[in-house]
Image 1 (cartoon, one colour):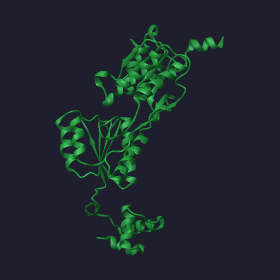
Image 2 (cartoon, helix red, strand yellow):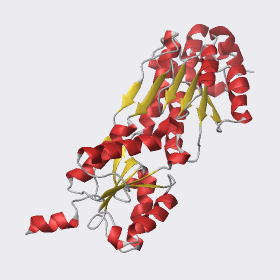
Image 3 (tube, helix red, strand yellow):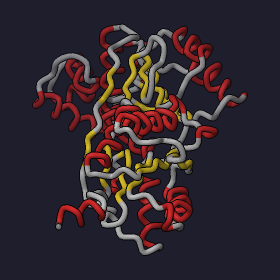
Image 4 (cartoon, helix red, strand yellow):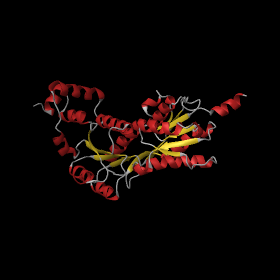
Length: 342
């Protein structure tokens, strides 16, 4: 089996230099690092993680807890976490965290507590007080994405402000008959995402002097959910709104498909706006509030590694801005355009 001494000899450097080059700890010139890596590849040298851990006290492994894997936002965050961690030489162990259950308890009591992670990232999981206490007792850096966690550096967006801005965009175009299609309050996501986006919608409508009663429709956070709700809302021309604020881009995609099936032109007869910045929003020409999940994942890794470097488990929290991306799914209502044309 090849050893670090063999790598050093082949690269023409000291053993300590070869070790620094391969571990990423300590200064090594770019040219020297490239020579050492090439030598290691040539003889098939693989550093022993157990030996490195004995020396550094680090496992080069991070635990990640997340409630969903298949949904778009969570998949984007996960991919950005993995890429950022790999770039810094870290492995990632993923736990798909279920709701309150013995299986969830086992993640906290056994896997996270007994496995030697250098740090933990919680993605959009509202932790109980007991779970927070359990994680703090591990004395490892912990970073959260999605909402506040006691004593933890977190990265999030302001869902109330994003929903308010989306609604204000429709109001600024002249719409007054606006409805909100969002998540069910009975099936609330962690950190009250559904409720917060409804609050932002209602705040904008109230400030504009418009009623909010009867303006909310619940839907699954999916394209089929938006499609089914769109058929129900838009099917009766006597009660048809001129604009819809969807709580997610996938709901918005379903609404647009329902409108097309009913012969309703978007945006001529109906404006639609979403929240997310989903990759398919360009294809649907959807106006949206982009929340940049990959940026959230990258910042979470950077915050975690800063905590490891400083020996601190608490860093600065951040509320990231969303970006209004205007496309052709929104325009002034038809009646207002006709009036302006006269």
